[in-house]
Image (cartoon, rainbow, N blue to C red; front, side, top):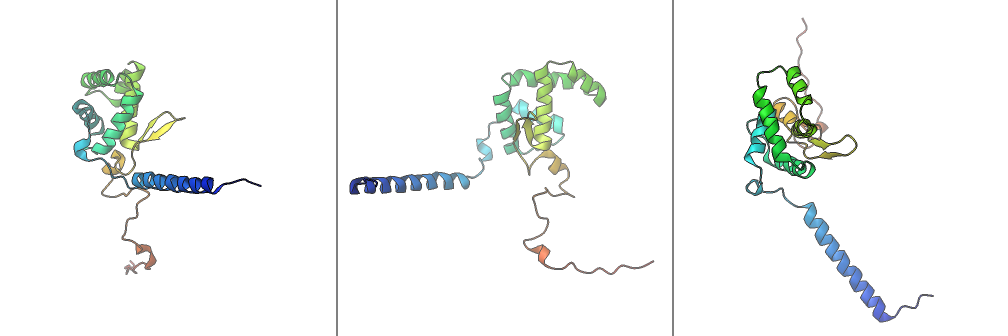
Length: 177
């Protein structure tokens, strides 16, 4: 039989109650956290300019850019130097055919080529990192969805209003020729 005094029972119950309240507060506050304000984003101008140059988008999503920049800054120790080298390579081969540019990129140091792939993968796919350890930095605001926004919605989004699928489709009169 368990020898449990009233003092231990009260102490255990209040400790459990306090831990539950603290855990609920932390979990709920994180679940309803809002996205960072655009004014709080710290994207360097050269990173944003390089991103716009590679993607062809005039106004890329700044929050996606911040997540991509943070990941690259953590993963690539010489990010600024590699961005400068990639910009110089793009300047030198701006009128080159894509195959010629890819050949020139292959002759560059590995971090520069990896930065090019990470930037394109992050902006267009929302995924960075290796095949064995991918990291999702974005989904609904990636460039590939922005380019197709007039005719395509992201796969997780519903194209109609809530419960539009309950109503049967309206019949259309088709003229037989």
